[in-house]
Length: 83
Image 1 (cartoon, helix red, strand yellow):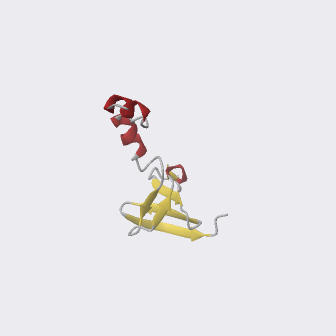
Image 2: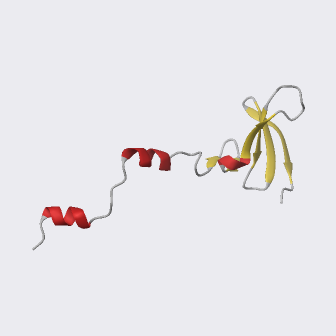
Image 3: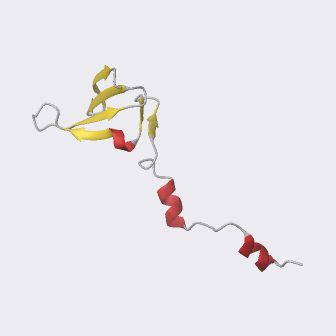
């Protein structure tokens, strides 16, 4: 007959709290905001001084094969045809 201790030993390993926090981070998977229209992984986002004027903009290559440039709170420019 098995005891409660035997059952606990046979069960799957329990991840610690720090591992759970890392797994839930949106920067490790993907970002989706239906209002902003962004569907992109963190590796597809970069702050860039596009015009050389010292003003960085967020440039995003999103999942819809569009290159979008954001300045402030809104979309500054967008172009299609990536890929």
